[in-house]
Image 1 (tube, rainbow, N blue to C red):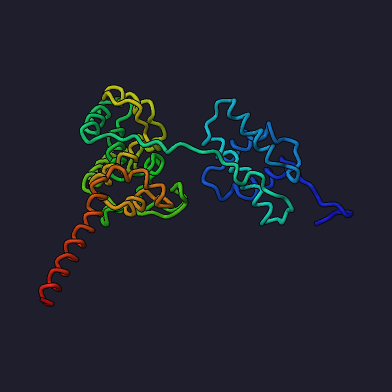
Image 2: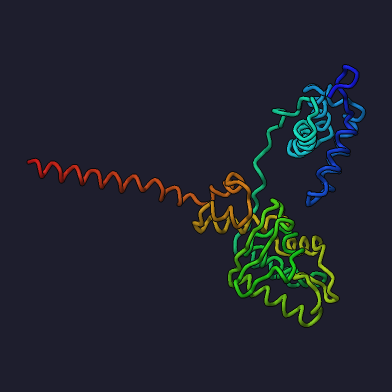
Length: 310
């Protein structure tokens, strides 16, 4: 829309405030959006978004690099600006271009750290000795046997645990992808949940939380206990999220198809799961061996045909 023959303009602040108010209510973590806006603000504050150019984006990138910020983090910050501009273009029909497009930086492959079963046994043993985190051993076992993220377990409520059907029920608001997911329970995961149920019956029968303290309040933090257990186990550079990587790595190593692992992890695309593919080289060997069988079959058919002719 034009006003007195001129196109209206909008400042960075107007854009980001309008965008935040429009989408924050639908986000699982609006704090992350707000944090990204705060990172963008020193460079783009006061600028007219209709006048932003790729050179402005390049300047932001170089400044953040000079601050020692990783390419991945810079990309996530610029994604926020790009999303706000696109929202304004398509929802409010602002006549602006998006200078962020095709400015993404190359990112290294995602972190992939996992442990073997012997190391996991040692870690669990040490976790069970952690005096300030009596729940830690149960948490680690469940993470290794379900592939759930930390908060998917720490925020798990009993009404989403189905021990009759042996599965966990996660709604969209409980998952990073925002999509509903069912987690099947193997025998070990089921046993751990029965142990948590016994704890609840003894100390806090009214608590809705699977991971609760004796007085019923939800367990929110366990980082210190977890790191202490890792140190005593002699396991270095192993984060809580790496329990999820370990779950996936064990499955792939045992020949579980990538598509099934993707669904168990709740990945939105198979590409996110493909980082584990190298852990199953035998699958590739078996795949190409199909050609050997086809070749032998073809040769045999040819020999029979020759015999029939002669």
